[in-house]
Length: 332
Image (cartoon, rainbow, N blue to C red; front, top):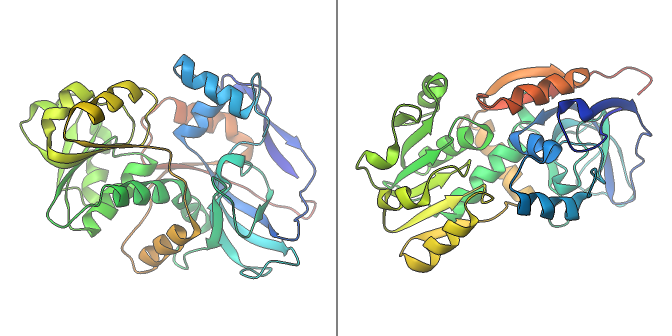
């Protein structure tokens, strides 16, 4: 089968398309023929390791010091089950599914084998929404589940005011919709080219961060959800209500100020890596099938243009999601 291989950490050109052995599912696994996957900002960071030194060191120790141990990148997928192990109960051949490989990666390929019941940080798969195609469904497992996870931690209530910083990406576009479903008043912060899209998703207010600093507006919020981890803690504190909540999806750059704020203020600072569940996938599927949640796709690339896709995402500024489509032939 064809798969993307990360030869080492570095620029997009370290990615190569190679023929590798097609996986065989274990007794507790399903073999999925992948039709769509994605490239996220997280995928770009894992490939380049252009991160603060200490975090880079942790990742090298965890995933491979000079090159990734799990050489096939990618976390999200949508496809069709081709085979099931003898112990699998929830799926059958031909089921259309969506899900994630978690920290084992491997979805930028024609096939992947995944356990029916994943362990911690392994992602998991569920039946696809009936009203989505493969490209659309592939964007839900990361952005949809992460936004749902953090908003639940923030205990968003009807009538509360939430600001979402970095609202135009994979997580933020879902977070706007989920916050609105909770009855919140949503302010979305991103760059000018994304503002119309943010309004179309339900944002009550939009802020172009290149022209306006939300911390200087005088507005205060019950919750600030910093998706990209770039807002200044020292300035943001005055924009959070007493006993308000600061949700931090990308704690790398803000670990120390976040810990200090947690210790010295009344604000509830929540920072962690989300670990999605199958129950969350099923919940998101219900919302999608009820017409309450949709995805945003900026561009699609075929698998053999994976370098171009990484280069595009790495420039920043994508609207929602970037999808990789996979064509199959009789030999794969």
